[in-house]
Image 1 (cartoon, rainbow, N blue to C red):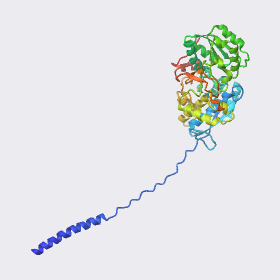
Image 2: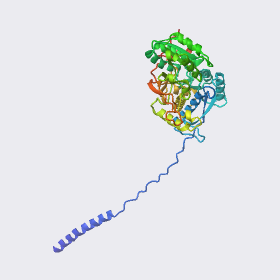
Image 3: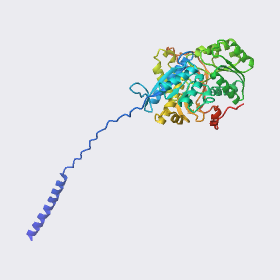
Image 4: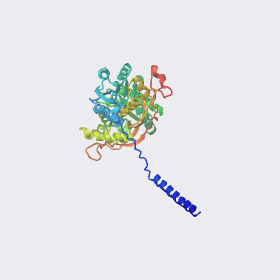
Length: 458
């Protein structure tokens, strides 16, 4: 019996030892080593660039309005840089919709016949797929037919006559430039309400001036006023005395001027000499910075005028970018003292580039007329002036306009040798769609106006 108890005790002692030994053996088994897979990163191949997109730019690069052509050209390039994010190909061409863009600039000298010849040369010899410009409204009118016959998009800026998107409209014609109605609607409302209802007009005897006169008549009547004297003078006029006398004899309280180029200087000198500035309210467009002091004298301080664009007015990221980068790029140029800051039509050139680039992104680089028309009609985009909207009905580009007060004539207030042109205080900036610019389509296209306001027919 004693022997049996000893045997049982021995078994009881051995069993835990065996269990412990088993546990120890399990714990000592090493964990299997799992090797991580080796990931080989494939080099990311940049997409191959598409074919070079050639854009023909027609402007007035010489003569009395050469400054406007320069602004147009620089603004367009700034717009391409902005839209490309600064990305270029190995030849320094900005890349839009995966296509390097080459801009071929031509000087039409303000001559419509030369503008047409240059456009045909750009299309047939250089292979451009889009045309931008010009400065002259007469040239722009002539180019509308080139666009139609060659089925190529014409993006107009800075030419302002409404005729291009009115009487001479065709589906290939677009604009980012304002129209004469933008000018006259915003100033007519202010003058009728604050000065009086009767208006006289002196305009240059060309498409720009005549378009402005018709727009002024419409605009004044919208606010209960009347255009009682509509007078035109040749572009080469050096003595405006007889035209000003007609104005003073008319009994109008307001005189609106439509002029361009250096003739403005003589016109204002004659107005001052004849006492017109003392007896009438002269409303006009506040023009480019560089020639401003030569046109407006001390006796015009405090005057109110309309303005298409002045770089000190808009408060938006696009204009901030334009002002900063324009100064950085051009302040060191030979003309940097007077052209360091963006000017009257720099914004228009940039707006044209933004509109075309945005449409090209939509079409994935297809610059054909059918693709671009579909992308541009109804396009709303942000530009240096704020919001722009290309109406699908008539391709008019609705945009903000300014009423400014002239408070300073010293272009270089800080005496640093670079003119900053802080001439104005802002009175009012319209919303892009506020002015109700009428649709002026005619003939077979008139039905496209739809519900837009129109000019009453006689």
